[in-house]
Length: 249
Image (tube, rainbow, N blue to C red; front, side):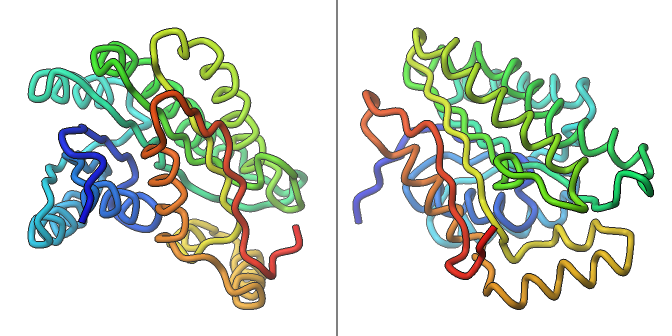
């Protein structure tokens, strides 16, 4: 089996479950040396064990990406151990839903910190390592909510619109260094995100909608990420919008 990512170093945030875990497995299966980052170390270690058992290479870093100091330590360790970074998958994210009139604004702040500011910080800290790679690639996991905002997801959409805008500007800045930037905008995916919704009525409505559209699986999004990062270095897949067949909007 051809392994196009042999020797490449990949860091995946939010790797303890869902899309992040699936991305890590897909990259490792293609030969990448994968660094798994998230808060839940036990989940990361279990995933790393599975990757190694399948013949891949993986290590773990327990990190809260919303803490700039912890992010600094994470990239410091990557640089010390590997001396470069080839692929950064900024996947860590949370979801809360509310009407604007009823919002707990502290939840908005936390979403902006995790979904947007942490991603921006990670991209900033990764750039020296990605430049050392000579063919670095940043993949930012946004959402179709970063394309079209719906009730009751105003706060979530604001964070994901921010990711899309940041990704567009970043690509235009760093292409001169041989660094590619891809933003992936998934629609409805079967992950743990609904568990973050504290309003029970809104959570039930979200779960009902998920059951109606036959949501995508994390592996579907991982396949899109894998496609982007395995293109020839002359090719930058700038944006991937991917939705379930039955999701109209």
